[in-house]
Length: 94
Image (cartoon, rainbow, N blue to C red; front, side, top):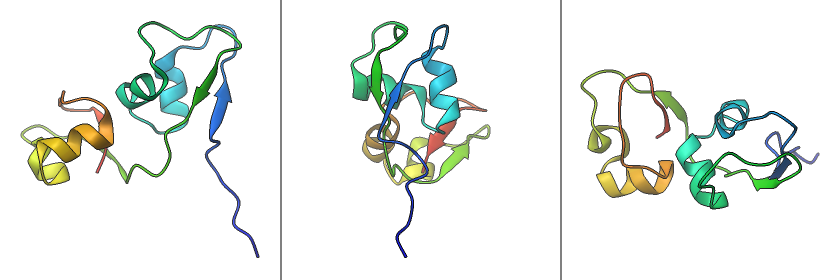
């Protein structure tokens, strides 16, 4: 029996979609989606985006947590999430 991939490798942007909506739909941090696709602005309808795969477990940050606590080091946090920013309610990969 072969396992099916639940998250596609690529996604074609539909009219009116924002990077944040797409990132949320695939449980990917928006900074990671933007970094992996070289996005400096909102994607255009029809644009094909690469969806980052297998980054870890998604987690909602709570107040007082640090990058080191969540991922072992600031460098690991940056590599997994595409940003060094950290704030409560942010969705990140552990």
